[in-house]
Amino acid sequence: MAKRSQAMWGGRFTAGPADLMLQFSESVSFDRRLAPFDVAGSKAHSAMLAHVGLITAKERDAIHAGLDAILADITAGKFTWETKLEDVHMNIEQALTKRVPAAAKLHTARSRNDQIATDMRLFFKQACAVLGEKILGAEQALLALAAANRSVIIPGYTHLQRAQPVPMAHHLLAWLEMLERDRVRFGAVAAQANWCPLGAGAIAGTTLPIDREFTAKALGFVDAKGRPQVTQNSMDTVADRDLFIEFAAAAALFGVHLSRIAEDLILWSSAEFKFVELPDAFCTGSSLMPQKKNPDSCELLRGKSARLQGNLHTLLTLTKGLPLTYNRDLQEDKPPIFDSFDQAALCADVLAGTLAGITVNAGRCAAAVADPALLATDLADYLVQKGVAFRDAHHAVGAVVRLAETQQVGINALATADVQSVHPAFAADWTEVFDLSRALAKRAGTGMPGPAQINRQMARWRKRLT
Ligand code: ARG
Image (tube, rainbow, N blue to C red):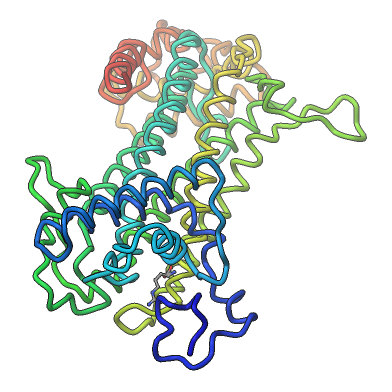
């Protein structure tokens, strides 16, 4: 006779598992966090069993009361998790069995395969909502930073070389675009999660007359019109881990964005740039060099992104080559998911906190953007407006830049006669190009960094983010 503790599946066994095997195969150490979803799933499932007459209303009520009490114990930290019971499902079911006789009927027409798929879909819906909120918080901090520094102009960079002047707000709003795509992406993952697996059983459904739509409705797996959404193939239902990969991919890409934002901030806070001062609360010092203030929150944001990518890779490798349908390998799908969620959530909060405490060094920004050569492209546009072909204008302005270098003066300090010797289309008004606010004001088209456009974008974001 198998040990009583393996009552869930021990009927055909003459001996219980080795201690080493128990240790090796347990998942309760990490899947216990699914308890609220597992309980919700079991309550909906038992409600459905009563609805179709497979259990009585009394049995359902006893099961519900027992599950509520168990969840209360779990929440209060009073529940004893047992490794030998493998996972969250069997721990809860076993505890229920001790409380109510009807518990023996709970697993009717259900398998841990459709049960874990359900728990995880409920988890993903919540996780995406939480991340959406947290990313929103970071976005709001970003918008506030942009609004507070509207008048600051910095060089925009390509190849990490000064390229063209842009309002710092334009750069910050570029980050906002990235984060908003992440938020939308997690919303899309939540929509994918919104299909109820219960009823798929282990692989081939059940012979019992269950009502899958009832369960789906009870768990909130419904479309915008409140119609139940149930998965459409029992084999795919228990084998599919696309959602895990989609969630991890969304987290990995969010991580890439965090890392790029962090890298910009690390550069901006260095002595070489000094565009910004990062908040003390999100920096640390050196144990050796007393003068150091290190941008640790940003470096960790950059570092964590490696971990988020690793988790995605783990899941891709885990599922590749698995025969349909469920295989125990799939138990390994949860640690990377929980880690991606936990880390992404922390990262979003840390980014928000870091952004909220940033002060901008307007003087350093103004100095960095003062080089008139940053408006060389505007000078080429000036020639174009005088009728010169762009390629010729580009070439002529290149020669003007070279001339300024030879004379060791700013490009705008050259004599008009000198620039006219480079190209006759230069007129007396050529230096007007170097008025920075005039240069930006001309960039009024959608998506450009002119002040009118920045105002419009800020208004759009204010509306979208509140
Ligand atoms: N703990 C298992 C997992 O995470 C639950 C499903 C177990 N199913 C099974 N047939 N052993 O995947």
